Length: 403
Image 1: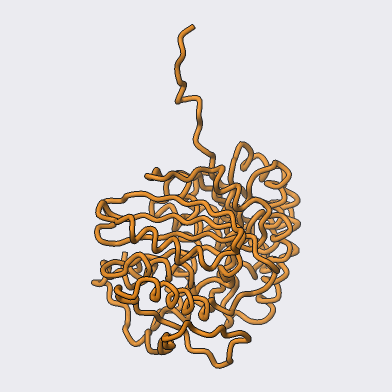
Image 2: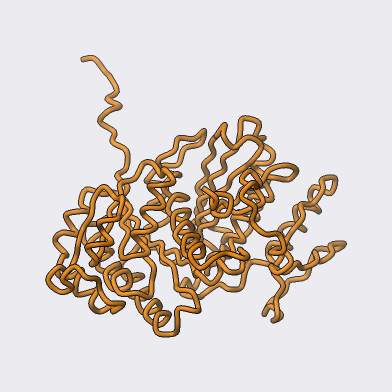
């Protein structure tokens, strides 16, 4: 009997991105405009006119009877009722998926109220479900923020993993942007959060990660930290790793994670030593018994740059809001690595100045000095220049802003 391998029978994982409400629909449009590949897009909204402007291949109008196609009026309860009314249509849209991303802006009506119902439908189907949502800007008011907190609580009950991006933290990383640009940047951060995970599955690499790896780390894990770092030049591996670990846009810290995915991508000249150093740097933040999955790939378009994606889950006390960045841990890690490789130049480290003394500050290794603090105000003195698209020191959403 002849023996053969049927490669066509092995289907790639079916990934779907569901944008719920206005912010979710905008984020989907941003992903399509950016050219995100390997995923299907679905826009869900109560607002018929907003759906008309969506670029998603599949559109689901919910709550036609309850809202008459005019939106939820910033009322999360109306958004919830609309989703319940259209539960069958939502289920039909996401069935046959292996992984569903749910993206929304928390605080309004449709996104806040309907996103948890979409997640519940996915959960009932046994689909791995990851939420990537934003919290409103402070200037949007306390009512909207309270709505967002309640919506996040409801969403968390039905997703396997949840990534929260507070819009206010965008103000710490950019300077002199217009009102419209601020919301566009928020949309693009949602795009980065989803692409950072979907690319791990859909893009081939030297050391491949697949859907099973993602499922292992993210199934029923609660809050997640997802960071992306990119650097070039001297010590580029450590610099990219540091950026990924210290992601200033998230409410979570990598410290103590029991599940960790590290994916490192660089040009053809990426060296084994710098890959090892970057991996060790990141691993030192995780729980000693953490399940760590590693992937690596080559991308000719990166040139001299290295890009590192870190996904961390399984935190002790996952409900804690980690506005306590791993500042001390980063300093200790760099100090430890320096003592082991004293002949190498230590990468320059940037820290956010604190007004409160950390609750715990471990002593530095003998001979180490505290790296001076630099405030974001100092960093923000340099304004965005559209001609600086190739400046890898700028976040990707700023480099692409002129497009």
